[in-house]
Image (cartoon, rainbow, N blue to C red; front, side):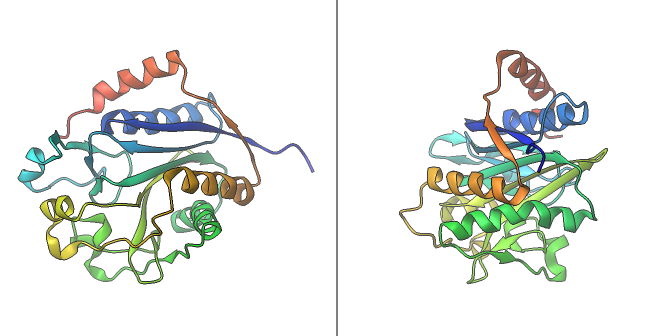
Length: 248
């Protein structure tokens, strides 16, 4: 047995959508340049935000003027595909890595394995979703579950993931719905599309992250080293964030 590959774990971060998306883009760029190892991180969006898929050209005009608890919602574009996601009461994960073999769906499932195992360790069973043909017409990412998404036993979608593959490297990130606000969700997507999420009240973000980090070690056969973003990295990230703030 050789030495295990060491992945970087960036500590939990709460920040705006443009900053979070800049970090994910920057991590993929650095990994492609071989300046940065495979990386795992978890984060939340403050203020709450709607993220649009990279190719999502249209969205309802009222999304530009939504507020929640006195905060105006951000509207940001992801570097990945898929439909719009409301980021409030959720926890997002990012994996940046390379060397995966197989097609896009196989790559999704290789990465999603750590999510399935991590949630299983905290007694939550997840399975892959099966989307009907309505997916393409649904602006709400959580309105349908595709084969790349993870659902609870009652069919409710818990995790929606999206992916960007570039030059042998993969950026995959996904939103885990923990405490979605029904009223805000209804304002964004319509009340009929809201699915409440039933999770044990004892489940904290810390417990979830610990279980997922342990699962990542096992599933990817890696060692994990925690390393915060340093000042020079922040300079590059914030410069990138300024370029990608506006949604056209």
